[in-house]
Image (cartoon, rainbow, N blue to C red; front, side, top):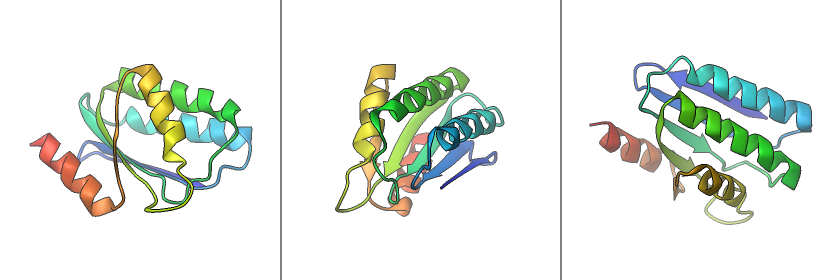
Length: 123
């Protein structure tokens, strides 16, 4: 389960990821993210909502990394990840991949906090 939307007015991409059912779904998610990024201008920001994300097999990390690299090439400026307050810490898979491609995302537990961080960044 995932949802990806580009907000052209805010120059921001919203990525919500829940349980991903298999490699085909992961590939589709990656392609959707890349496609939506192309609607935005260089310097865009990203909120990744991982509150319902379930840790995936290690083979999926290569898709995460490739997608993050494509986002950087498209002009990604800043990322905030919204994670669960407690429980599985799936955001670590994204943190590990992002360090490999050269950026760090802040982790928060509320969408409003993520929006504020990126709105302040865009000023």
